[in-house]
Image (cartoon, rainbow, N blue to C red; front, side):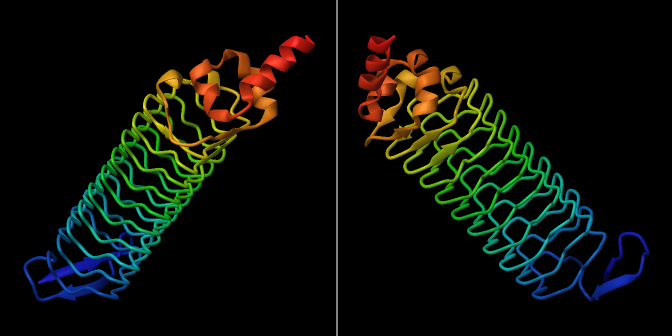
Length: 268
């Protein structure tokens, strides 16, 4: 017999006549404020489950189906979510520090205000995900699919986006200090007010990419090694402030940017 109890009162929330919750049918279950520390949910059916405000530190969810579930406000730090199906899941303000989502399907999942520092999201599908105001510092997102994802105002310092697909991503106000974007696809991405000091952009793909108010752009690494598939845009204020510090190879992707700078130089 397995019992799941309230994390603070000890009240029994669920009892299951089984030896393990691995592979269990728990679709639609309500485990609000549950004590789920180190519980084994591997391969379980948790579609539509309510795990809000629960304590699931170091819990095991590998291969589970969490489609439509709500884990908001919970603590799942150091938990294993590798290869889970978690489409349209709510993870608002959840603590996922040092957890793992390698190869997980997180399409359209909302992580707004979540703590994701040090999380492993390598090769995860995060297309159209909501990652606004998240802390992804030192996170691993190498090979992740972040097409059309919203990362506005996220903390991405030291994050690894090596080879990630950020096509159409909203990167407004993000802090990419020291981040690794080597070989990342930034086609149609919008970097408005992004902090790029020490960010490595070597071999990143730019195509109709927008840079606006990126005052530290000249402090990014690998600007001369960027791959341009189509022209991109940079605002005139940034160009006038830092344009002369940018390599000619980089400016070539912005249409008449170099000619505009040359005209300003002649005016001076």
